[in-house]
Length: 353
Length: 287
Image 1 (cartoon, one colour):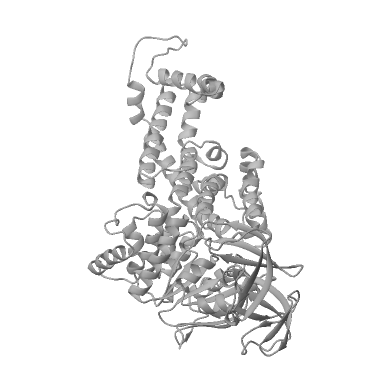
Image 2 (cartoon, helix red, strand yellow):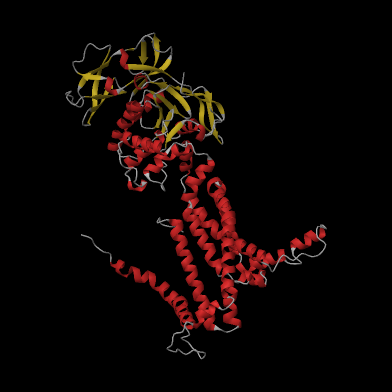
């Protein structure tokens, strides 16, 4: 059973289809991310769940209930806004207690719950501050506390860490994950930052052009991308065009001999092999891997924690490799590159791709 | 090292001098003359005399002036309330729901300014007059048997004032609503506030500055208004502006007229100061 479920949801703005037949289910207490670049429909999908937009087609279920027509203020859904939307004319306390007051909670109850919420987000004693007296990170925490204090069944977060500096953002990622574990609420998190999504999520829906490209755990999304878009959007990858020779053998254009892939790979004829740069090993004495090729080092870029290497196989096939700075490599050097079956994945070519 | 550009030193005088000269000649000097008159410090031959008397101020309380003041304040208040009641929903509609038509709608609000104030008031007369559009139309429809005169009463004055001052209310209201972050209303909604509650606890407090600015822009000139009551009003809608005009130009009592003017200014300044203190509650007001 799903806590939030979208079935074939469509949303149009004029002639633009913002959300195109999206179906997905979010389980209770899950950290679920909508990942995609701007304009991919992730925020609109979130706003449909919040009730700020009504779907043109399809069904939205909250718990067991069809929620298409329920106004936002009657849904048990909290929201943390991209630009926070804290009430500038109220104190921190009044901001956080707003939802409780709307629910007509008792004075004593409100006070203790607001204090708990401030404690939870690491801002004890900040109740009397004005919003403009807080730093960006602190305002972020108030926004989260305000949305959480009513203990909503689902918390929606619309790129809440977007405006923050990198350091604070990384810190807040871990904080959010901690808060989510501590209170055990379902989180639906919208982001365009793939690193953020991979770090925090239990499940990710990768969106593109209003459609869901793939749903899966961070590991599935990263290791077994189902579409070229997903493989390209999440991290860096090498695409090698080719076709399936037979089950478990993929012939790549430009490689002297076919690539061995996992047997249960999708039944495709024309396709593309995706392999992550960090899964490719490089060394003159490389041996014992399922796929091995002779190559020549074209380019070496030192990047601190790793080295980005371009290796040329044959005449015009270049493979990007990420390797440890401790591996001794020289420009123009003859070497070997290789990877195991499980490190690459074959993607079916989409129509028009 | 902080280096100051040469121009900066001359900036302030250069920028302010024209205005200071202008206001000095056309506002401060006349104001000072009025002040001198009100204390009886200028005689019939327009010569300065070194005495100070409060008699013209005391005369105020023995005259019709207090009741005229009362009427004017009431009329200005009614105008302000009516403009707010009409202007608020209108500004809200344009700012929040206007979408792409926003500019067009605001243009429609501003267009009446392109016609002279006097002309607009005369135009109202052709509607309200005995031979005006309303009277003639109702007569021809047989709804009334005798010509109807809608002019020369307080209602006509109120109509004229609201008509002329409404844009002054809408403009600042629109500006404050335009600035209002619409996601605040969504936030209120997601926290369980229905549209009514969201309006009362978010929209209204955050458009306070617009309400304050609009009310002052309408109230202050409305208190001193004299053309509209002159053209549309009767004897019972005689306002402070008319009183001062009569005292200066008909009765030629420059001393009492000056005292009445000074009292009007003092009263308006006091009301506005109190109002601003209340409406802004320490927050900065933007017009």
